[in-house]
Amino acid sequence: LQFLYFIGLMDQSSASDQDVWRKIKWNGWGSKTVSMQLSETDPNSCIHPSGKIVPGLLPFIKQELYGSAESTQPLKKTPSLTLQEVLKKMPAPIVNKQFLHDLKLEPSQVQVDGEARISHAVGKNYRDLWRMRNGFVQRPPDAVILPHSHEDVVKILDAAYKHDVAIIPFGGGTNVVGAVEPDPMETSRMVITIDLRRMNKMMWIDKDSQHACFEAGVLGPDLEEQLSRYGFTFGHDPDSHIHSTLGGWAATRSSGAQSNRYGEMEDMIVSMTIVTPRGIITTPTAPRAVGVSLKEVFLGSEGVFGIITSLVIKIQMVPEVRYFEGWLLPSFEEGAEAFRQATIHDIHPATMRLYDDDETRLSFSMKYKPTFLQNLVSKTVKKYAEKWKGMNMDTVCLSIVGYEGSKDQVAHDRSVLHRHLHKYKGLCIGSGAGNNWLEKKYDLPYLRDFSLDNGLWSDVLETCTDYSHALPLWREVKQAVRDTWSRLGLKGWIGCHLGHQYKTGVCLYFTFAGEQFDEKDIEERFLPLKQAATEAILKHKGALTHHHGIGFEHVPWMEQYHGKVGVYIMQVIKEALDPKGICNPGKLIPIKDDASKSEEENEAAKKAAMMFYKMGVMKHVVSLNKGKAKM
Image (cartoon, rainbow, N blue to C red; front, side):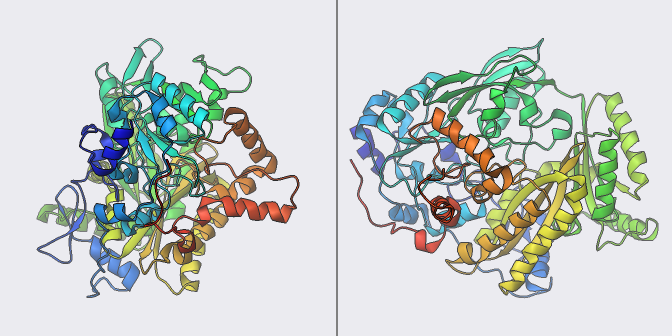
């Protein structure tokens, strides 16, 4: 193992070339071979990852950020540092040799080379990738461990607990709230990332009960492929589906695009097996919980109590028909009311998304270059919407509706929803818009990477609230962000869409974007926007998150959201299961109050411990060229 360590720092060729992380970007989204680019032949167009021309995106960006779609101001080039440049800046690892010795794993399961460490250092939000691209690597893991089985995870946890090594579970690494990043306050003990993606098999299937058991590291497409052999589907389809894992979905309480039909993770998971420092917990598979539901304790726990190794899930027969179509609605307010009335009257297509006017313009700007016929049809629809439906194309909102089921069921559901949306002056624009959405639904992060390459940035946040607060929350979040931009003397863009309907409320998903300037972009520009938006969300009874999780990004508001007693209960569970605090330090739960300190002192100590105020903030960025490996 010592030999592996020293060789690993210089050469990674001995490790498995098949590991998923080797195929995806360390400083961006998705496959190393896929990206969105400026057109080389037309400086006013972009090339979508599919290779098709997108002529409307650059004019949209220039209109929103520079004030004119005709602006001749070129996008500013902001390329990432190379991998080798960033590796030279990366802090040296802390190595606990006795821990590595006690693991007794295969050599390829312990990866300590620079690329392995940097590829597991952060998630995939703007703050994460901005730091990677600029070489601000504050605390990468010291080693990456790749278990092959539940038994391997038990072995790793036992050794980590014995030697006081901090552990971070890592699924697909697509998290956007900082849930997979080491805490920079871990300056003395070794921190390892446990990449679970080699644990990717279906262990059994029960067709009668419609249950299947999978290892936690299975990626979305692999899970669906294995189920499809038996005619089943899971039905969980988040935007990160291609690159995220079943265990990660459970650990963050994920929700997919077809949640109206299949439910969220808390509805779709039957049972979980979790390895904790105190031992192994397997929750029952009975249809209902008895007393306190232990499954609920671990759902959304983000690895702070232990590591999920396998899950029993509910499965469904593959639907006979999947049909998606687009609608135009006169305004966001009218569309939101149409969605609310549909939900409370039990009209439940698998997918119902409503984009506000700002996000509708973004969606239209992402259309491929049309053929002559497509352009003619588009103009005809626009004229019809304006003249015969009385729609103002500046405020019109796009909706995407998806149906799944038998032919008869889909036909019935479409008929019912069509009658309903026509009452709200809706205009169906056909399956072309629905299919276009389906084709591109996994691609929005590539637009974020394109922004980072070209002097811009973009990020997301989401929430859910009850219907009476939904529209006030939407208005106030957008206004709070715009007021912050104005106060800072900046311009930016923010849009929103509704998705994931409930009887009593709805999810609101915000995307916002602006310009890059300098090394203080995070602390002086991004964090004020994030704080303003979060305060507006809480003001209107919104959740801190809907499906992204807490990570470190939302920890400052956990006591405000759950109350001191609620957070105290989480702290007690954490101490009971993880007495040494080795499981994903710095995430989900603020540190406990010290009874010997005043309230003001405790609040100051909590804030000082929170990663939210450190990551990407220059005064906390350590000197990355110093330090030696601690042996």
